[in-house]
Image (tube, rainbow, N blue to C red):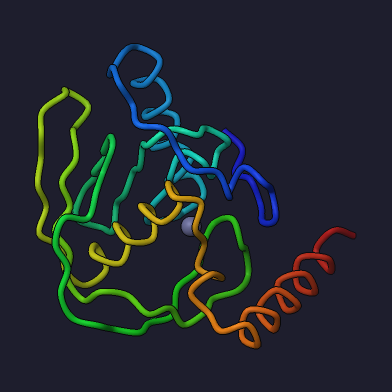
Length: 162
Ligand code: ZN
């Protein structure tokens, strides 16, 4: 799978819930996992590879988690940290996040699962669930910081093309 780059309009779409975990969904999930590892990312959401459905995969170093229709059901605390995104290569921005989150979802066997996450896993969940709503890390910034980040992103990635 190819990772779409900002400002691809698919990254702005709201993803549909998955109704059935059929062969196609399983195939998409496996492909997303491979794509995430190949890109050396800690998470990937379906719209990042052009699929507008609620599927995410995460591995922050504690094992692979692939979820269908994930939702943040509880959150607590505030934290600001540097974050990057596979759709915005070469830049990181300081993003405000909840410190801890509870996430409910369905696993690939169709079983309901709940995670209570903190640290990197908490941020990865928030980042990937944002993608399912068409939200990017840039949206968490003030207009001035966002414009600066976009300028830097365009500059760094334009140099790369030659
Ligand atoms: Zn991202």
